[in-house]
Image (cartoon, rainbow, N blue to C red; front, side, top):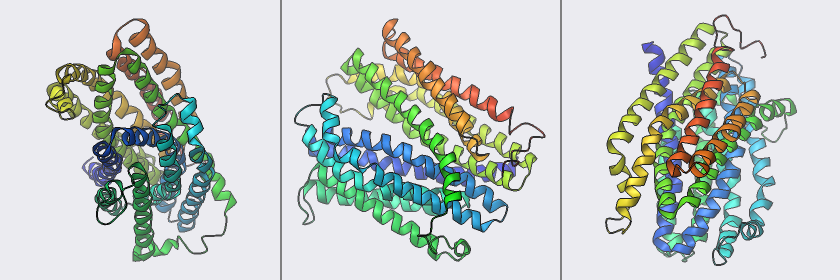
Length: 452
């Protein structure tokens, strides 16, 4: 148990830190655009929301690379490590290029969504630039997952942390016109995102090509040669992951719309509470990634006892962290919400009270969200993604969304009702996904490597 615990923490904590740093890239953009101007901030928020939705689907291919590489490396199959990673990069590049028209013609979409007339031109200009960052951003995710599957999580953490600092400096120059740069506002933030992603991918490529222990995989040798069989494997594993991620993201977007129907103060409190829970969710995501790697390795070694032991330890760690965050939300909810509000904000007391009530519901939310993302990680480790995709879509849209509407809007429980519906949807996903793993590939005597 202690050995497995060390493995989970050694993998999960740096991955959680890397996810938190990646999250801070968006936070720094929001803060600095907020300092520049309200219209530019609104354009940036709209553009970032669209970009994130497209990016989330595209990361399905990067997430497919992690279990494939972990399994291949554990069975000493260097060729399969290289094939899976290369084709993950190929699919990411193809997806990023294919999505460019969506960003280029985004003005029509924003107009159709009845966005403010003064925001639409800026939003379109922002997204036209930001769209070119999609390819390097997705390739960054592929190489991070490649390194994580090989147990090299520290470098991804420190490179991502450095990218946050670089993003602040470039934003400072290009948004506000400092350090001799032109003042570009929201366009400057988009250019900064491109530059940061290009520097990050360059650093990761250099590390992967330079480190002697990684040279054995000759990752970039004859990179231009297609491998249709490996590409098909990454595609079949990756697109269901992307759909499941988009389904969850869309559920939270729909919840924000419903809370907006209730009132402005409720929407502000919802945004703050969601930001807090999203930050701590990154830790669960890191442990989920660690579970994917450990289970993938055990699958590659055809060691069912190690697979079950690693899975149990990862679940226990995630449950322990969820318990701590529950205490934090209940004991310090008003303080946490207050950190996001100006002391002289007229509605400060009202928003804090509403946000604190949301965090009390989020205390239960943490258990459900942590359990479902952990189950997803375990199932990805055994390369089971299609049925989990269906379970996720049913749980989030067939159960969670209708429950949020009924409790929050139809029955009049307000924002707390909307959040309670999220808990129901996430809990449904957690139960069904955990049952699929523990009654399937995680049961004693199972042979989840039979499909290799």
